[in-house]
Image (tube, rainbow, N blue to C red):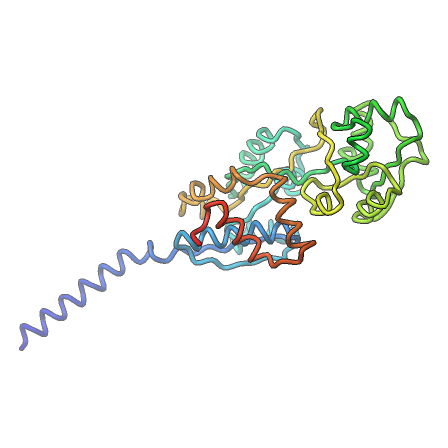
Length: 301
């Protein structure tokens, strides 16, 4: 009887030791953070679903302001988020904006090493400023690029009106810089200042001909607008990329590889469509994110 009890005790101890040795691999836990707008909710939800598919337990902290999210990342309350290269350079680190996507990415990667933050998986989602027109009018006037717009305005002074918010109207990387870089000028009466958001309505209602926008805004699709190509690459790069604590990056290096296919697939046009489904069609963030991942093979049905 003593031999049996001794054998059982040995088996139990061995099992406990094995469990202790393997426990670290079975409990992969991360906190995903997001800012307080639709695109961020969608990216965070996709991140959560993909990580869970790969055996991670995910805690979500969303609806944060940009500065609050960055602070949470810096102090380890958030492990992973999607952020924008331009925001990382200008807002968080006080650097000059960079227009080239890859240069902006490499620069913020290098700078944030010192802050214990690692950037990976840059995408073609570029949530930067853009100039938009009604598709029909742009086609009629033969305007596809900002250079085309400059040429048209210079040869037809006083004809086109531009809608802008006060910030864009006064920023060096806003309207003044665009006009200088592309060599044209709207007359004083041709620039209409209004709260951001109303510019899309004004454009749709044919009260203006050109408006400032953000390149992944769902209203571009809603109102059948077209973003003019920034052919001189004036606007800074605000490409979305994964930003995570270096501690988590080193602990789970496979995360970069897990998200490689998704980051390579995502672009501005895709985000316009996904944002549209949430903002205009009023579908839930979870449904839209899950459907996109399943339809594109990033998630098992």
